Length: 262
Image (tube, rainbow, N blue to C red):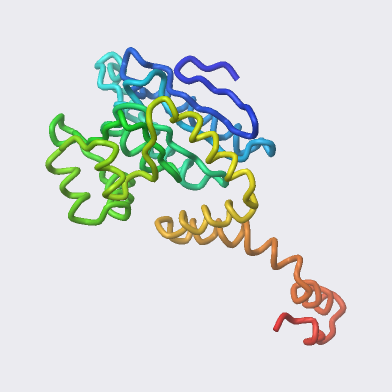
């Protein structure tokens, strides 16, 4: 697949998705988001990939969120038809049946902080920093960036992060539960690779079921249906109970209850 805004590579059962807009602080525009979505959809279909790493080019920026360059928003018609499909991206990360790891080497600000938050695990360099700046610059995130942040750090801390717009070090972020681990900058990629190797030792169906279960909490009937139709129902179809009930119905007889699970 040919991309302009991201780098996409696969090696040793890992897919590496890198925002390649360093001159823009790895801020994402519409095209960036759509390219990441395309890469993740490719990962979904690839049985050889067991985990995904999301990161940014260089060491200064992970991602500064949405690109506020007026040139990226000059056509008002783009305000319709999902102008900025970042919600689709957050939702896809959340429901992708494979672990997604944010590898944060520098600033994760605004939508970049939410992007790291939405990943299943976040491993950060000691040089990383985290911040929300919405109310300072005329924006906000009423959705994933608030609900999931509250779950990660607690209600009071989440409101502090969003309302006071302070910058937090990697150690601060670890202490509050925003990230999982802090490592030295020159050890970051190696540590993330080690974690991906650990994940590859786990059962892929079990990991998929866990992700679906976490996803279901915030997605009501759609989330519960994903758990049911993608995971529970196929397993039930393989059970003796389901098979016996199906045979009995087809043969117009009473089912043999001894076949039922106890």
